[in-house]
Image 1 (cartoon, one colour):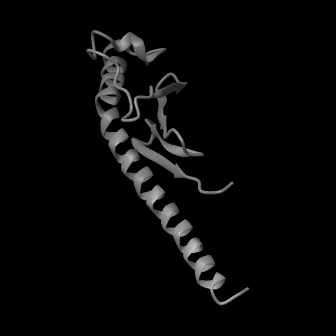
Image 2 (cartoon, helix red, strand yellow):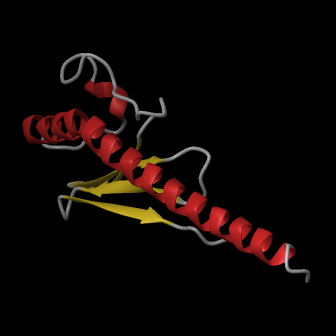
Length: 120
């Protein structure tokens, strides 16, 4: 390696690391915003469950009695919903253009579980 290629290689590696850090920051911001987007949906699911004694089989039954329309993520994607048992459900979203990034609201735990996977 010449004296000139060492700094170029170093700056290229530094640029890649900074890019990965910025991607993670943007992904984390998207995750927080999507969690806020989901709050009305979580409330509607819980209210439906309290009033009817069962979870909705699918989210579209919440419209129009519990929601005017189904919310979407800030990336304009639908939330994924699945029931685990008669009283538990998961509500998830994924961030497009990323690999294995997203969050799921776990009703039983009443919290979000998020994942950022920067691996291959």
